[in-house]
Length: 457
Ligand SMILES: Nc1ncnc2c1ncn2[C@@H]1O[C@H](COP(=O)(O)OP(=O)(O)OP(=O)(O)O)[C@@H](O)[C@H]1O
Ligand SMILES: [Mg+2]
Image 1 (cartoon, helix red, strand yellow):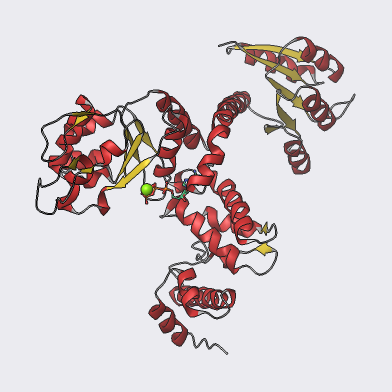
Image 2: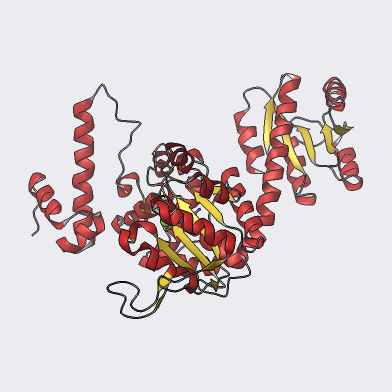
């Protein structure tokens, strides 16, 4: 990789020289300028990556230089050097596109750390931009067929998207997707399918949890008439249905042991045999498996076959839980608000800052699915133009402390009561609809209404 090119702009010779000397010891090419006019001349000739600019200079103030530089050279990242305690300038600088700042006096390693942060940011940005192009091709289809695109710009999601692109090109390698419930495993599987050469064929999805134990083999392999009691006619199984396409096997951890052996054989031999038949049928299927279990642990415990695990984990994508990539929460929230405002037919709503704060400290055990659900509900419950924390029906775990148990219960009950009232209001007092909206049974809604003395007029 080319050396990083850094430009130092500071009217104080002492600072300029020290910085230049210090930074030249690293793998950087360093340029320095006393005046902004000189800095612009350098930027004209040399492809500068990062500029370090002092905010207070006689010829032109640092913020004006920052604005002009970003205008003319949008790819240059700027680190501002500000006076101690000058918070207003810091905010101003960040608003005008500075990627970092340091306050004078600073220690030299701090500048090195800021450069490294900026470099990482630029790399991430570049990776994100190159992915955007590839994913823009499939985002409409994902939205139409599965309700959403793959949203997020955390390093974790960028890595997931990069793996999707890479694996999509390896035409028939089997893939394993792991991650807690609601992290987007099926969404990722569909993404792989749509980016692959099989995209024009039907994406088949089967959930091992939904298949009765005694029907597994017939569901996957099919059978011929009379091969067992109840086999009234020939039937093709999932592998054949998904021929030339993608077969998504969800909850792979639930696959019975004897079928794990068979699946391994299908992966190796690329042919199947229907129950009761002695004819091999060649199949060309890309198999994507998923699980929300810790499959490595299950393998160690002997619940999942070692050989199948090793066959599958060569192409593995792990999606981290939402609480480990909190920077995705605001962008997901805004995305869901925009799609549900359209489908529910509500005007564009603003989101109060407390909502962001509250969601940021919420554990999201149900991951993105939970965020999606509570956002939809919030939009239905909201009858003003601003989304507020109470619309989200989650307790503020920061405010509730162990030392005030009574207050906590009271707070929670108040939230619960308000939520029920809002749901009834939103559904014109239709209890069945309100219960559905709240995701609770009709009977439970009645009990709660009695408890909180909620009456419908
Ligand atoms: N990164 C994301 N961007 C947008 N929507 C997402 C994202 N991740 C998940 N979702 C949405 O969250 C919901 C759950 O996703 P999905 O069904 O793929 O999760 P899952 O990991 O398969 O969950 P489970 O283990 O419960 O089957 C879907 O509606 C999906 O569209
Ligand atoms: Mg799923």
